[in-house]
Length: 300
Image 1 (cartoon, rainbow, N blue to C red):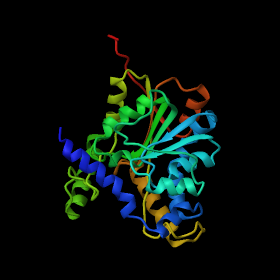
Image 2 (cartoon, rainbow, N blue to C red; image 1 turned 30 degrees about the horizontal axis):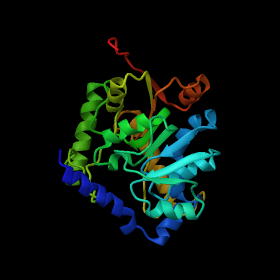
Image 3 (cartoon, one colour; image 1 turned 60 degrees about the vertical axis):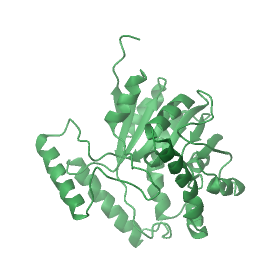
């Protein structure tokens, strides 16, 4: 194991927010009437079945160094016991001072200080793919959660679904290869300037981890998103040019995803450690989550 690389990667991530944000950007994250907030709210809304059915639950957000915006959404929706965590407290400290969040902890997601089953739910939104060793972090999140872990992360576009036809798989593979080639990108080499390989998620990989831990079910939902410069500053008005452009692109992506030409961009994964309440599971299915019944280990 390359421990020097791991330590270097942690250091780069700790420095990231302190060296790569300005007051204007920070102020934009506080605003809830912008196009950028609307984008993130579309992802957050997938949490509502859990929030509404477990109003007294405790939550931990992991990799929430972007001013604790994940924790703030949970608090705004009535949850009282929410702790934000990140490897750096640069912006979490400010968020706490601004009463944007109620509590935070500095935590390395791959080795957290919490005891087993410390929180009902653990949420990791768009941070898992930044971790140097994300699978270790996922095992930690499952260890800490009492009820379930939720990941909102980019979907691995290099994995084809078995339910797709050979023609659709081949066509999309060719299309993706051409697009990536034109951009000069190797689809298997995807790194960020902060120093980590981008680990995207898939149903298969999540299910393998859940099966290995002898868990019973998983839930998945697919979604598309698109970012355009100016989203942070444009207000959510009906004819806003940035909003219109983003909506148009997302609608196009949704259509292409439905007919199988492209993969969805995001995968929302719920990994329960217990049987969720019946009302909650019904709400998840109503909100277009797919339920996977996992095989039980016959030898345990």
